[in-house]
Length: 241
Ligand code: SF4
Picture (cartoon, rainbow, N blue to C red):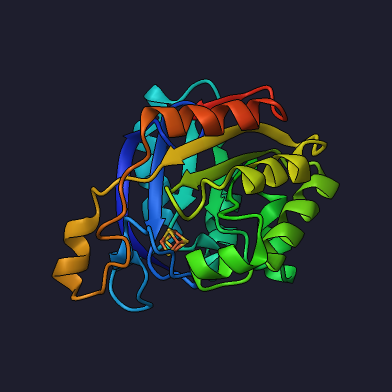
């Protein structure tokens, strides 16, 4: 059983090829810049069974090539790791690529089992500095870094993702440290920079949540380029999404 917030068919932004993207309900982080705050609460969303999702995936089969398949995103997907183990096992058995988009905050036995049937992890490492990570997400980055290390040890491919927010995550010294930290990880296939945007602001109003970044500017083209240039010192494949 899975609690699903929403579904995107024929998605092209979250993993290779064309994908069915399942956004899970509930999250254990509270990122200041979250553009889907409606996924955060534990309640809400729709209960679905793996079989229903596999049926949707099968409908997309004619379009699936170049490693396309299924992506599970959030909210935080690992919070529903037991249900996802069933879903990913079935998706893989049917020949689809399985991709997990995650904040990497949980690494227990169930999470490890899920990773055994995961082809790719899109890992958001939201800040390399523990104090800033706490400030930006209300959570520690220690488990996230342990999660990344585990993926490296197991050779599980990952795309690292980084949301660039002026004044919060664009400090040059920390971008350098972030690059330094991951530069020798052989499983990093690409790095994606996600410039902060304001598209989800209306949701804060609807939900009655306080929006701490109401006055935060979006990054300029120069600021984005600066981050790209820094990450390019450490990684071959750097993209802006
Ligand atoms: S981890 Fe993702 S879903 Fe959760 S609060 Fe942060 S941005 Fe929002």
